[in-house]
Amino acid sequence: IRLMAADRLLTALFPEMQAMAGCLQNDHHDFDVFDHTLQAYGALEALINSAEGIFPRLAARYTGANTPSAAVLKYAMLLHDIGKPPSRRVAPDGRVRFLGHADRSTQLAANISQRLRLSRQEAQQAETIIRLHLRPLDLFAAHRRQAAGPKAIHRFFRDSYPWSVDIL
Image (cartoon, rainbow, N blue to C red; front, side):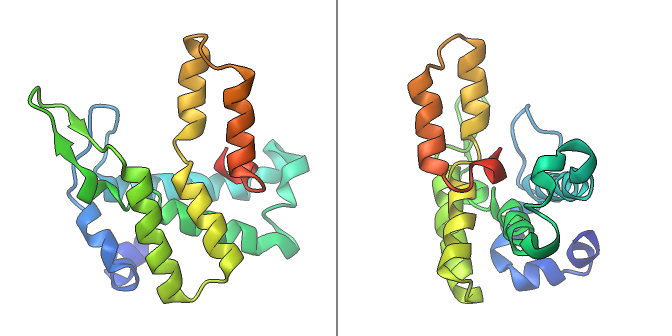
């Protein structure tokens, strides 16, 4: 993926990604949106490649006959923040915000999935992962504030089924 990015093949396949390069983020990120995406993709590949040793009961989900599940997860990782550039706003106090970027990313991914002629299930899986990619972090933050009740956790699993594990 990094070689594809360096040779501009990645943005030739996904022209919507061009705006991600140079799109600066807030203080919670060390990279622009494009480099963040490449870093996240690399981390996902490392996790999948070491799944047997880390999560042996889940490893079968991403290897062997289930390789399509890993491919869609990687595809979703590439597009998870594609909606950040059009959602980027700078508040009067200088804070950078990306309100609604998950929904915008989901819309862009739906268009790309249609262009690439992904199956309905593959498109739904990618869109669900992208739309809900912030929810686990939101639940964790709520848990730390002691504000995450069983209903919030239930809603996450209800809304993300059958791709809850992929999102986590």
